[in-house]
Structure formats: structure tokens, C-alpha cells
Length: 142
Image (cartoon, rainbow, N blue to C red; front, side):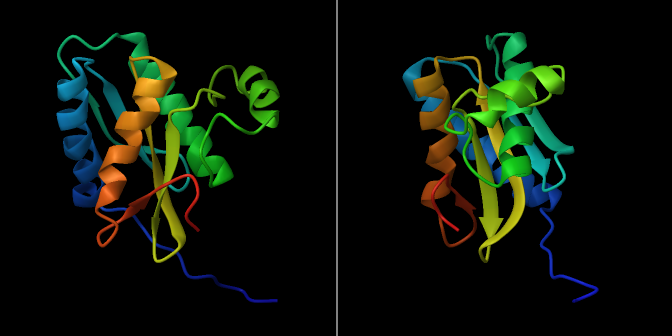
């Protein structure tokens, strides 16, 4: 059994990129959003609350980011999340607005978005992933 494994770490510059990229589509939609980027262990690296975004959106964004990092998948489709949300006192979420961030197919962290409808949140979360040369934000890429 190997004693070490290769990992990838998300830098603060890497964490800020999806935040700034997500602001444009949120503004275009007219829905101010909250964004949280966490590292692979679920610790917050960067967060942003756009002017006019709902206060509780920060809580849901953090919970969905932590959940996506924990399960290395998009939130919203895995049944255990509902039980985990109760067991973790809201620390994880089954809302569909958290996506893992991967570099070279390795989990580096996750982004969570909150303050709009679930559909608006996930649409904004997926937008930064269009620049796949730099990073991949996706619920389906591995």
C-alpha cells in the first residue's frame, strides 16, 4: 500500500477566478449571488457576497461547496445528502448549487453559489467552468 498520494492545492488566485467569473452572469440575470470556494477538505478559501444578495445565501453557498468537496461530485443528486445535512447541523446541503473544482482530474476544491433559485445558482456556478484550460468546474468531469 502506498504511503503517499499526489494531491493538488487550490491557490488564492485560483479560488478568486471562479468568484470573479461568476459575477458577470449573475449580474446579467439580475440575481445578485453569494459565492464560496473551499479547498478539498472543505475549508473556505474565498467568498463573496454581491450587493443585494440574500444574507442566508452565504450559508447555502458554503454548505453546497463543502458538500461538493466532500463527495467530489455536484450536489443535489445524491440521496444521502439529506441525512448528512441533518447529521452535520446544516454543514452539508442537498441543494443543487455546489460543484467540485478539479485540476488534472484531481479534486482541488469546490464552489458553492447561493441567493437565487436552485436553477439560477447552478447556472452561475457552471459558467466559470467554460475555461477548462485553467480549471474544470463540473459535476460530470473526472
